[in-house]
Amino acid sequence: MKDQVENNASMCDPATESDTHDKKLMVRIAEGDEEALRHLIEKHQGVVYGTIAKMLGDPVEAQDLAQQVFVRIYRAAGSYRATAQFKTWMFTIVRNLVFNEHRRRSRATLIPLHAPENESVDSGGGALNLDLPDHLTKRPDESVLHLEMMRAVDEAILLLPEQQRLAIVLRRYDEFTYEEIAQILKTSVPATKSLLFRARETLRVALQDYLEAKTYS
Amino acid sequence: MKADMSNNHPDDSQLDSNDPVWRLLAHSPMPQPDAWFTVRTLARCRQAGLGMEKAHASFGQAWRWVFGSGIGLCLAISLLVAQIHSESAMHSKQKKVQEAFEIVASLGSDSDSSLNNTTSSWQDTSL
Image 1 (cartoon, each protein chain N blue to C red):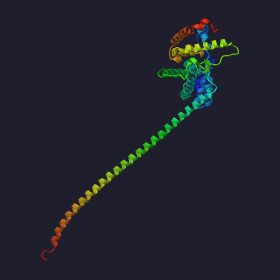
Image 2 (cartoon, rainbow over the protein chains, first blue to last red):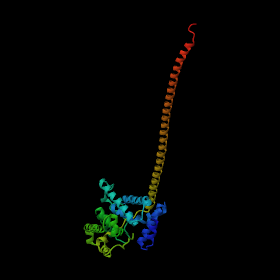
Image 3 (cartoon, one colour):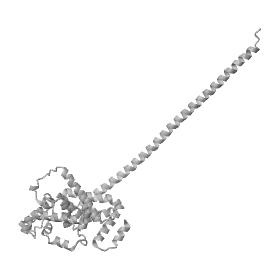
Image 4 (cartoon, each protein chain N blue to C red):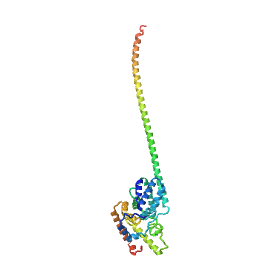
């Protein structure tokens, strides 16, 4: 694997460089280097956690699943072969864990400890645990509108079927290419484009009020 | 995260940026993990690693136990077989000795009878 990693290092594309760095970290992790594991976690925790949180709408569960992703990476470091892009491989693990969680949830009847209607978005419940808005630069009514819009967007995303939801999150928030999304979802590029098109149309209908009011602009 | 956009067709990216839905989605940012996420994840990985080591160790220990008990069992069986074999050998030896004794005894009885005959022949019965 080391030779393959060094061959890839000769390319100077930033994405390839990042991928080569990840693969080098994986080699070091396989050799038992904990510092390399720390680097890898610090580099990818934002996108992994963010994607899972967007997919599940539950920050606590997202944290647990994101940790599981890194545990799986750590365990697989010894047998990891640098055949595909590291990022794609990592998000395949994310996909498997998230879809398994969906299946588990669909089987179990989950009763929330608190009613979602009474929660505010920034209290850690509701759609997602999001950052507080900037009250210094926005008027209170604008902030409320912004929060409401954020919540509506998150709820609309959560209502999408899981494949469409993951495709949208990977494309919009993680800026993956169609080819990468197709690899992660184990489907073809045209099917991925179709998924994204249908997701956009569903979101367009769900968020019609906000689109017409143009409060987002 | 800045992703590789080189594989994307320019019209796809343009379509994304021109789409109002796409722009609206930007108003709901990606949630970020808390500051302790790395530390907790490292601890969990370490625990998982220890678990793996323990599993390896217990497998090694189990293998040693299996190997040891196998050798013990083989030794016990071989001892038992040897004992049975020696017992049967002794038994056949005893049988042979007994047969030999019987032959000798039968021969002895024949000679005794002839001896009796001879004795009677030299004994002076007239006296």
